[in-house]
Amino acid sequence: MPFPAAHSRMPFSLLLRFCLPSAIRTLPKAAHIRNTSSMTEGRQPASVMVLPRSLAPAFESFCQGNRGLLPLLGQSEAVKPFPQLSTVPDIRTICPQFQKYEFGACTGMLTSLEGYSEQLKDMVTFIIDCSFSIEEALEQAGIPGRDLTGPSHAGAYKTTVPCATIAGFCCPLVVTMRPVPKDKLERLLRATHSVGGQQGQPIHIGDPELLGIKALSKPDYGSYVECRPEDVPVFWPSQLTSLEAVISCKAPLAFTSPPGCIVMIPKDTVSPASCLPPEMVPEVHAISKDPLHYSIVSAPAAQRVRELESTIAIDPGNRGIGHLLLKDELLQAALSLSHASSILITTGFPTHFNHEPPEETDGPPGAIALAAFLQVLGKETAIVVDQRALNLHMKIVEDAVKQGVLKTPVPLLTYQGRSMEDAQAFLCKDGDPKSPRFDHLVAIERAGRAADGNYYNARKMNIKHLVDPIDDIFLAAQKIPGISSTGIGDGGNELGMGRVKEAVKKYIRNGDVIACDVEADFAIIAGVSNWGGYALACALYILNSCQVHERYLRRATGLSRGAGEQSWIQALPSVDKDEECVAY
Image (cartoon, rainbow, N blue to C red; front, side, top):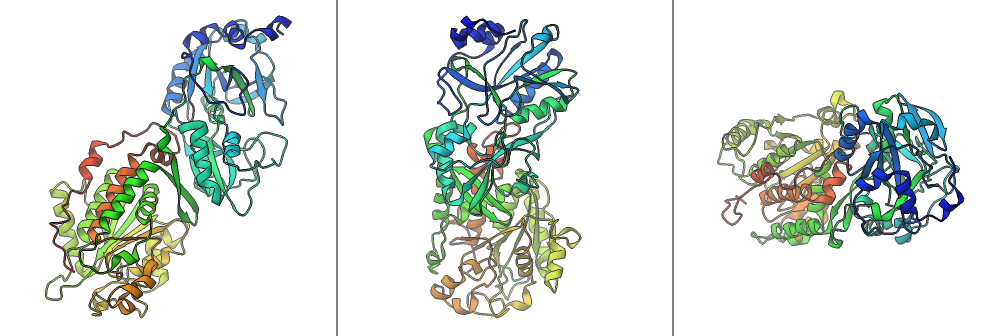
């Protein structure tokens, strides 16, 4: 039923009170909301879902269980009559008022719900916040918008990332993408923080296949926004996740805002978006080149990790390790590990030739400390060691379990392969590089292969006969997409230090001979390698306690894990490095 002409002059808040009186009573009081390019004076963009009353509690729980994706502004009884709400379509579309769904299938496009007055008596309306404007953030960052390849709204994609399932609501996360030049990512993150707070944070930066998106050129909704060679795809949650949720419940009748259309509601009915303090501006860091992957962390959390990095860089042996330091290697390694699900750790540096086994004490404690924290984060963890030292490491693991350092025994592996094919078979299921068993390798004070194929201690003594070719695993990983690696060392002759080998040759005693030639993606330099293992565990604690990173890690689905869970704190290493006895 069309409105009388007088309604066009009626204040919108009064108009909505006329349309949805109970909704206005249930929505929160007025709140300050930043203007976005989608807003008009006094109005706030939102999407609308109308569901049977019997499904309302489950849908409310679904929104609350995925509040990072579906910020629910309020709900109300659907009333009779249900006059036309004020809609603002995408500038490139002319869209109807509502889509009608029956048992999960779209069966009609409606400009009014006037003909469904009886059904609406037993239905509930949900209003979901759509206030964050990607376009405004891009404009604020000085990044020109891109033309769409079609006449519709910017494309949205169904992912393979599941939302938290509540009752019959079980659906994938839906995302929208904008291409951003690599050198403007940091600027964009500052702008999205300014415009949308936590709601403006992207949930993925990098390769779309990590979200299960096979082809950016084929969005599930809307039109493709073209990526150029210098661009990085950046993804945000889409309001269309709520549409997929409605489809998944297969309600006998439901109505939704159509893709590309929003409903305007009074700004004075909107609760504040989830805000973060100004100092919580995210930093963005590259953590993988193949596949391309970036991670984010708040500036204060990043600074805490940098302080850790400075602390472990103390050089008690005066070896000159300060010349090997690379900025933010601890931070980037920790970010990469935070995203990993299955980690392989290696350690072992034979140096005491009058002992059996001849292992030094630096390395195994750091490996156990890191494994313990990875366990409490729920990550699969294994340790690979020399065959001759297997019994020693079995006793170390057994003792760590008895003392409560490890929750459960860490699987111990050995490797004595003779070729790159053997190494690939060790790393991958059935030797298939598309199915790696591990997605991050960590070497802590592990003897590293020099350029001449031998292994040397700091005094240039060749110890090749005591070392299994675990280096080959790291070399094979360099050619397998999806596997990253970290090396932790204190002298330049450890596995992974090939990343700084030129500095080792120049500044470290005997460096021209002992320098490891095998590099890792990240090289953590510490005065004692154990410190590097402890610092990596502590950095993971900092990251997983960081609200910005934790949300990005779970892609805003589900609920936030409590920062600083007691089990995390208990798993942190507590070793006084001044009292540690380490053989050099």
